[in-house]
Length: 495
Image 1 (cartoon, helix red, strand yellow):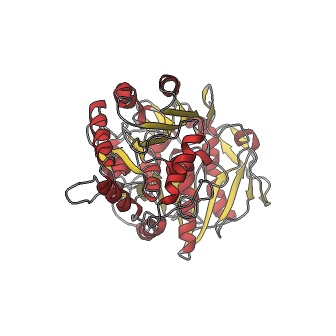
Image 2 (cartoon, helix red, strand yellow):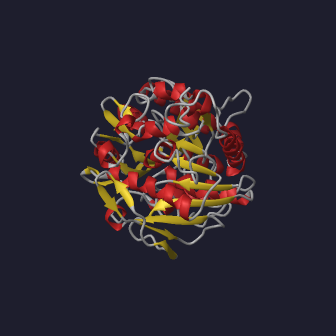
Image 3 (cartoon, one colour):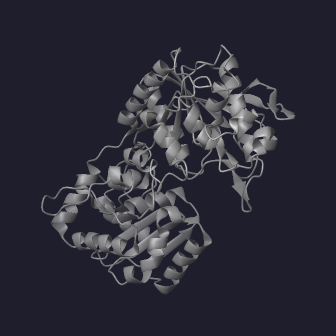
């Protein structure tokens, strides 16, 4: 099968978050299964190309005409990579915005990207199925099912659309519809209109053939008012076409047996290296080598409300009364950066903080910590808790989204479970869960069991990739022309 990924970021060429990891790892897994896979990305600053395929593609954006190019990059593990090349739109210091906020022309930037994606399919690489990701590529199915209904080359292409984080929707003023050259009829409640504005993500939800999100529980959660971000009704209406497929992880990059970024390799059978990694982690944060009875709790995260840092702020002083140390890496909201800096100043021998992102240090935290804390308000999938399992670093998480799907609460009586979970979103619940984990750490037999249980888990991409293939086949079958029950937007199934 020929599968085209259309996304705004993807390793090894661009990254701001977990989307880029998926856009690297899933195509690689599909290629290993024998499928022909290509990835189309915007060409951002410093992305190197292998060859220029089409020097100019004429793209209409409302009253404007632009002339981006299509280039090919180096293949990676058999996956072909292509770029939409328009320097004035994409050769910028950041992908989506700067310190002052989102780029004001994001609607035009990603509308052009979507239009060129369709031209790419017609002129360079025609797939059997298109897999779009998040709001930046959501206009691909919108355009295919509206402006390309008479285009024999692409009108029947099946589209799978993945929601990586529903909170990011691509919402713009109503005038954006005219600027990007979409018909005014799409400014309606059953298309892109959203409380008087234009919502790109909503278009993807309505016009794609199948929807996925990155864990089973998150697929259920986003159909509720609490997690639906105003789109829960739209998603419920597409519930028969929504599938939760858990993200996998790339164990070639995250494996303590082979990791070149940690002090000493180790395995479930021989954990001696983990002690060396803990010693190295403490040194990296200029913390004294501590009493072995005092566990190190790691945090690697974007500092945002979504990640539950308001709960940590609520109980920080109570947390620090416990016998523990913190190793924290991240950046984000200034209030949370200030919180961790203040904790480091107040408890200099027990709290280490680095503001920013450092891949090498992230690996050291996973390998050297005893526990990993993720108290998220919501978490579509999450990857660090899965990395932690493989590294024998026991996750302490809130039971939401992918955190709930991947972590089983440890039961001392049965010695079963891989971590510790709490349900209620509150500081007291977090503190109680953390204290349970700390108590288990003091019981050598139970701690050995929970750690071994986690290290035995396999969340590689193989199973998830097979689930996507099944969905791609279903999407292809869904594009068989129907005589009855067709929407006025040729193929947009909104049952």
